[in-house]
Image (cartoon, rainbow, N blue to C red):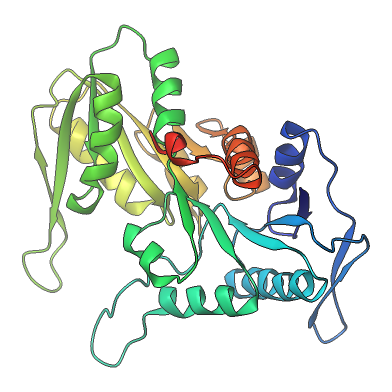
Length: 310
């Protein structure tokens, strides 16, 4: 097995390699003066099972091009199999036509990754599960729910918990964690009565006196989760904590979360933390390196990955 790290999340790639007791494959991924990406693999990988680790997070287009060109370099170097390990899959929120004459960008990205030379994709908590069907190659979509459930059980032992989905679309994800914690599930129903009128958040479920755990797959600007936390507290929740798989943290998200009524926000390291995230007093990262490493080991050994989904 060989592991190649692109530039978007090298610390995660290093942690995965350490968990597998393997060195990272020597490679150069750099830019010319005009910002074109150039990739060179410095080791013989002919006949090898190669995993390339790259989140397609901000800057999404640059990181996607790095991944595509690296895949092409690996395939042209006669690797036996190339697996694209994409902890955060950019463009996943564009999984359907949002209106007339609009693209389905997630499908286009799937085509690009396949054509560039990927034989398999390993990812985490896709925004829309149906994206697996956009590929004509195997896609393993791991879940952060077991990781989150363990952390919640350790840190909130003995507290009266209520798992909350911030919208109807996230119910399946939240239900999986609620089932692991043997606790109740609440849902926030967001509605905008008419154009120009503020969004109204209705809490479905009795959260009074409960320590609420909001669960989502992506935190971007942070506005939705901060508003959801306010709605829960107005409905009598004792406290609100947030568990999110992918910490995008666009714009002033970190400051917004720091000023919100959130006890703490927990994200994975699927996206490399910025300095603002690292020094934040109420944002904490959990590593997915052991999970990815185990999945990669099983793929390389041709053993079952399915138990990691449970």
